Image (tube, rainbow, N blue to C red; front, side):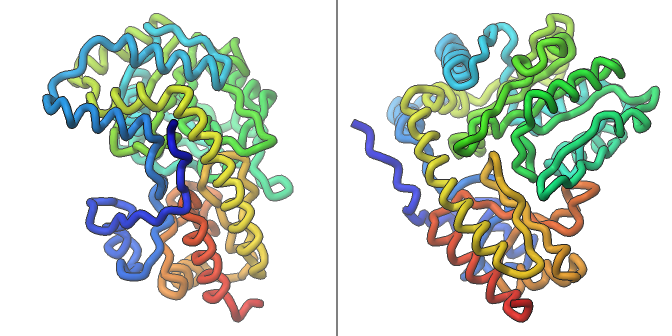
Length: 394
């Protein structure tokens, strides 16, 4: 019998080559000895036992050669998508990349040319814009609208931003950093926009298993079947099971012509899978993995409640209600402070490293993003520090 996960366990990560903990002083000036790392989007939890057992099995065998025979791996992906999302994925449509930032870069490389434009709904995951610009393409930002404290959009507002150079739209579903689970109607509107303007739609759904009670995520192929011929889906085990260091991701391309283009770019760049990632993903996409995710979301739901209640009690701060992800998006505009002022209070006063909102694009300037996937005591300590750092406002 598998032991129930202990999400309250404090696991020391200093000195383990953790970007999140070992680099926060360099990047944010937050002291390593007593700072709290709440920036990088990985969790403070061990993955389910089945994943650990897969790695230990590799270690016992002791030979780390090239991975072959992907049948079990592909079967696990297909089982998960059908069991958890009701989506029947053909095995031949699945490509394995070195994570989904790599997957995004490959999509940009395969389906656009230097000088082309790619549309983003901002604020949005910062790596999208980074890889687009690094590839010599242009980023077109379509700012989201704040409606009653949550993000929404109207695709009619985007029409004027389409140019003859626009080739692609990248959607973050569920949304990072705002935590929105887009409705079927919203997803259909995005799909119809892409059809209307002859755009490739890349739907990054890496957070689609991290959904809170009362919410329902619908994968794009089911929400808008009309867009399948121009759709590239991106999913992964890495965020769901806290195995981001395995650098594996699934890029799923249903259209055979788009599939051939993607395969050609992977072949040209010599990309092949990491065996550790494939063993871990195969183990994770299982009934044991599913039970672990259900327990995780129950735990994170209480972290979300604790954080929002404490932060929203601080005058001038507002944490956007999370429908998905473990990434809280906090607006500091009500304080009347400049970004430099409230960032200084968080980093120097509260000794917390959080992502700066401006890096997520237009609309993010007055925000910070906080990672809540940590033992509850750490979240409670972060709330107490934030309340102390802004005590003069209360």
